[in-house]
Length: 334
Image (cartoon, rainbow, N blue to C red; front, top):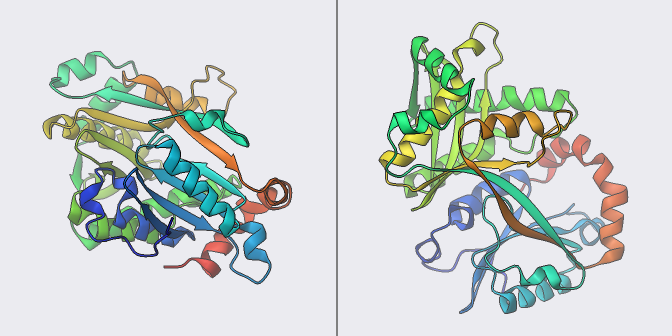
């Protein structure tokens, strides 16, 4: 099984999933991944390798993330065997953005079943009133507030708008870092995704403004039957947050999915927790109030080398949040 550095001819035409696209692979280089394309008659996958590219360190730090299209068991067996020979210690297989179609590998040795969750809204054929009736306060109220504040949401088409978007992303990342959580998505990721995925219809970017001031920006993955929220950022200026730019952008995206006959609006990752003390409760409760349904999305984690995986968990993981920005500056491959 060959792990190709470049996509085979016609790769994008053979997959409807933007998460497996050439453009997404290129954008992921900016967060330190080395993409590899794998395909045979059974299935196809986009593999992301990441480790510290220094002598001795590479083999002890090498991990992989896989997005496999269908999850054919024989294909996955061959791919995992190839990654083991390459020296990969730990593999994540799919996530809440694209789940496994076949969960047979949950029963394999050294595999841990991973149950992720997402909120989905059925958008097709629903009027604005239908969508609003399914929501819970304060979402409808905040949508009306955004309207009274003359918030305008547009798709990003220009480099100037893209710079406004990345400025919001960087402000949001600064707030995340202040809570000692790594900024996973540098501005370069969105610039690469915008330039490579938007022209192919695989992604779209939204920017919410009020009186010309940027309030919120959001990136979505686009497929024939699903519009998936990927990432976003917003201002924390006290004069601007009451205008509810993020809510206006989500409302625009939901109706955009409907108007383009995209059947499902995917709100992205969530948690089933009802514990208000849980760190994931606030965001998940916000998504729940839009009237969607919580669905379990199957994925998996695979340990290919218990010794090296234990080293990564016990020695590297506790420091990763702090060193990740430095890693990106030094070792990103874009």
